[in-house]
Length: 217
Image (cartoon, rainbow, N blue to C red):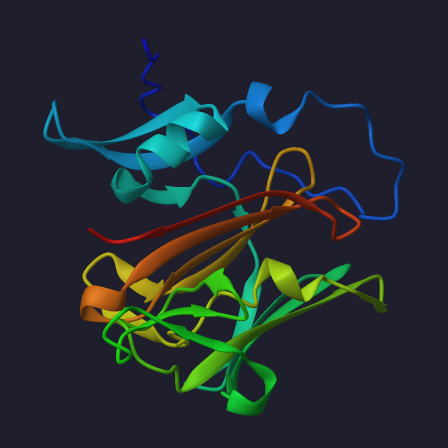
């Protein structure tokens, strides 16, 4: 796939946010649209800004660094919740104590390695029971928007914290607003062999457009 590398983009200053209750224009399907991202180009041994489709992101998920879209302000209570917001929107990601009574456990042939929860593949631990589950809640124009639990019920051990790097403050969970007023949530969770990355894209009414989850190799 031949990609046009866009150098010198104005990453954050050129994006404007339209009130979420305005009528949405018709846009191309997710698979056909281009997304503005920063990623590690291993062949060129450099970090680049580029426009790619969602299939490229999914195929090269471990080279993905961030979306080049409007970032939201946030408040955080470390290891408990992080909440992103602007004048029209509030998205909250919480760590909820794992309640084993709500799950069916499936193990491998040895009977000791946990493979599924509620008959679904899950992320966040390496064969053992999780300590915390993930909850995502959304408000648009002060109205609670129901997000189906199956969007996040396979994501465990949320890494709710931010750290100071030479490049600035880095949060493991981020929320953006795309050029099409979509809500883009990126999650880097788990530790060691259980670490994974998830990208969840919602429309401006909170409906799922695309979800990508991959465990780190």
